[in-house]
Length: 222
Figure 1 (spheres, rainbow, N blue to C red):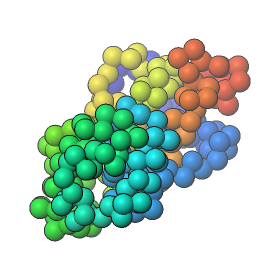
Figure 2 (figure 1 turned 180 degrees about the horizontal axis):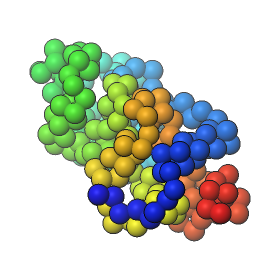
Figure 3 (figure 1 turned 60 degrees about the vertical axis):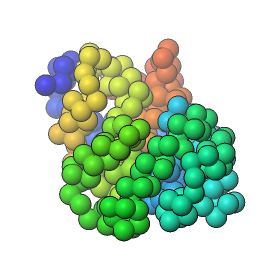
């Protein structure tokens, strides 16, 4: 059970917060990417780096005409590592990309659509079996690339929940995820937009040292 501070009507409060953030920040248009494959690659490359560096790496892949499953499958890990070097930890990320590409190529006939036909939680389980794919990356792939309703949890999500007294900071990833999915309508757009808005909120207001006076959610804590 999620150890959160008692709040009155959690479901309505979360929806009110979503609407306040949407009205303040507008749609965030996540996840940037022209294709499902590009989004999957971005989800892997964004680990431990800024999105600007990911964009450079993806642009390199485009320059080499490598945004294609078969091309990536045939490419050796050293060449791939060189192409994605701007993303940082490029040898590790090259291995991780090759691991997920190999699964799509060998198990799903090189077609992401075939991966998308599987039940969502089974897809998640399979992704988590791939070396280097953790829960946040797997859920980002499911939500943003496969367009299925799962809530992504990250350090910003945890900070937001703690600062707004929804929980005490002791819970694991899956418990926090269940909290959102239990208290929000099961809607892909809502999960997508809400997570993106929380990230923007925490980058600009709900920082490690919060700027509560300037925050669009300051009335939520009154």
